Every structure is written in C-alpha cells, then in structure tokens.
Image (cartoon, rainbow, N blue to C red; front, side):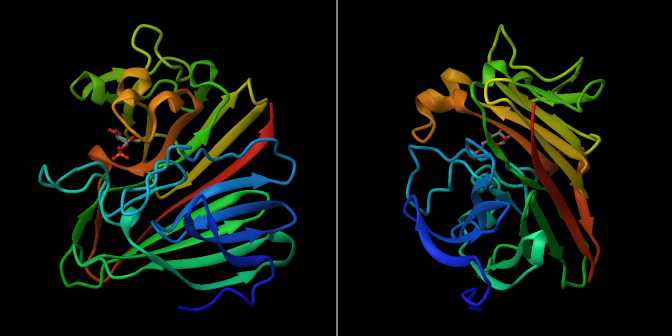
Length: 289
Ligand SMILES: O=P(O)(O)OC[C@H]1O[C@H](O)[C@H](O)[C@@H](O)[C@@H]1O
C-alpha cells in the first residue's frame, strides 16, 4: 500500500471505529473509510453540520456502513443478480487501499483508492476523491476481459438534513420515476421531490435524469447540489418510520437523512466494452440558502 503520509493534510486515523484516511484542507475536512472505500464525513470550513449522514447506530464491519457515500458496484440493489446476492454489490464491503494522491495547491487534495481483490467480478474499480471547497468522486470501471460486461452502480449519498419531512429536491420535475414502493410502476414527478404526506417514505429510481439535483434544506439553511457526469439515473430513498424500525442501524434516526443517489440503474445499465472503461463522477457542493 502506498502511504499517504507524505501528502500535506492527509493522515491515517480511526473514525467511529472505522480505519480511515482523514483529509484536511483549508476549505474542508473529509474522512474516507478504508472499509468500503467510502467518504463518511465532509465538513466544509464554514459548515455548522456535516454534509454527510453517518448512522449513530453504526454496525461493525463486515456489515455495510449505514451512511456516508457507499459505492454500489458492480451492481445496484440486486439488479441482474440472484436473490441471495449481497445488496449493492461487493465494493462497499471490500477493503480499499490508498494507491496514490497529491495536494493540488489551493484546489485541495486528491486521493486515489482501489479495492483489494473482488473475485466475484471481472471488472476493476478505481476511485478518485477530491476534497476542496467541493467534494468530488470519480469511479472508474475498467473491463480487462475480452467480453463486454453489463453493470449498474451508484454513489449512494446519505445527506444529513434537519428533517426529511421539510426538505425538497429540485432537478427532477417532469421526469418519470419507477416506484419500488409501488411494484416498480412508473409515475410522473410534478415539481420538487418532497416526502409524501400520505405514505412518508421514498424509493424512487428516476431514469434518464438530468444530472443536476438540489437538496434544499430550510432547517439547516443550506442547499446541497449534486452534479453528475456519466450517470443517467437519480435515486431518492428514505425508508420512512416503519421501514426504519426494522433496520437496526437506522431506527429512530430515519428523519435525519435523505439519500439522493447518482446512479446508472434500471433501464440505464452500462455495457463496458472489452478492454474499455466507464466513469461515473459527481461533485457535491454546498451553499447557504
Ligand atoms: O439496505 P441497503 O442494502 O443499504 O439498501 C438501502 C436502499 O438502497 C437504495 O436506495 C435502494 O433503492 C433501496 O431499495 C434500498 O432499500
């Protein structure tokens, strides 16, 4: 493993019991768990609350981390998989190593991570995380085989909110979505996403979405903007009170987060050609409302 000790502002530490890399820049502090290779905290210098939600009821590895930015890879949910396949693939329970990185002066710090062997897939993953005024993710998937491989994926962003019942998500108006809480039937999104009043939970896949989503949180007085490249689907998920009651790592904390995910899922699956590469990227930035 390449150490990151020689990059200014980068150190190995533990965070909520997880082995982690902490990245401190003048603009923000971010923490990346080596279990799952996932960001678990992003705190811009002027922020009063973490942008990312991490469950206070976190289970220990190998249970996937509930919170942060899980990498769903090389498939989303159990799409195209047998019923007993692990939800969201293997990346989020793999151990990742830092294999490179550099300080980019006033732009912040860039780290490159790769998972230790994932024997279940032919595909190879590499994640670049950039920490500065914004938080950037770039997930590269390489297919070294001689056959095309179909995949789905997501950055399963858990965003901290004051109360999921009082936030809105812009950028989805007019799209169709597949509702997992309604047998995957298609519905039309009218206006911003808000938590439904009659059945307060959400598990929606928006195919062919625009790639620019705004989570407006009046309670925390901020807007979180997610700008996506190479990802055609958006997913908006919160299990609601009753769904969360059956999840030991969510429980009463269900209203503290909303997942707005950058994905290629459902009809937006990706075929990575033999010898080819596909990249999913997102930029998360925060502004005052
Ligand atoms: O419990 P997990 O495997 O982490 O999945 C949590 C959620 O992830 C996505 O948002 C899916 O659309 C949901 O159907 C799923 O419940």
